[in-house]
Image (tube, rainbow, N blue to C red; front, side, top):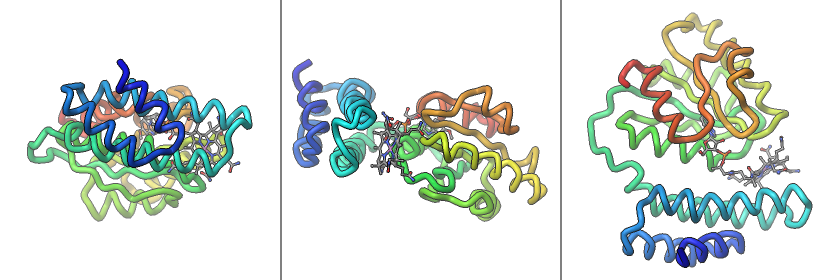
Length: 212
Ligand code: B1M
């Protein structure tokens, strides 16, 4: 569909205002938020990722594309979140220590909110003990840890250890995800669950919180 292709191309060029306008137009045309996300915003970001890897674009281009992606997802947010029910449980989410990537984590947060749970987003570059402090302070049932780098995913294990040190093993569940993370890795570090994408992450959060 032409408008989705326009979103892909404008996102790749980092044209934030155009991405916002096109996303609004696509919604007005009756396209679902999921379709716009999966066939417009995400493919645009993926092309940038491949070009970044091949040294065809550099950090500034990736940053302006990421800024356009964030603005586009902000337009979709109300539609993705549209559950409107009283939250049945709280989930703390954050990107692991050393890691500044937050687009996937933000999407996960929107999907979890959309599934009717409360989300406390504690940001990026989060130290292990901060996750546990936030879980205690918010009486959270689940902590969601995101990592996008092979060099930072190893820091997820420290979150599992911090939970044990706080005596919360079995009480607060830990789920992990992000591009380099796998089920095998989650099992190895003693996490309670792994999800490959934001939508299945929301299902997993509900399951771990016991409200599925
Ligand atoms: Co970075 N980066 N980056 N980057 N970046 C990647 C991740 C990389 C794969 C690019 C590449 O080489 N092809 C590569 C990692 C290589 C590796 O470790 N294997 C990389 C690198 C190397 C780096 C730097 C080291 C580059 C440098 O400085 N030399 C640097 C590190 C900075 C740091 O974190 N300390 C860096 C910096 C950046 C920017 C700041 C420029 C920017 C981030 C901006 C931001 O997030 N605000 C950036 C970006 C944008 C990317 C790419 C292009 C896109 C990431 C993204 O947002 N994807 C990325 C390449 C790529 O992925 N194609 C890349 C879209 C997002 C929706 O997907 O986050 O995977 P994702 O989330 C998915 C799932 O993974 C899942 O759900 C989401 C949606 O379904 N998910 C979860 C995520 N978290 C979850 C948690 C869950 C469950 C599911 O439960 C808790």
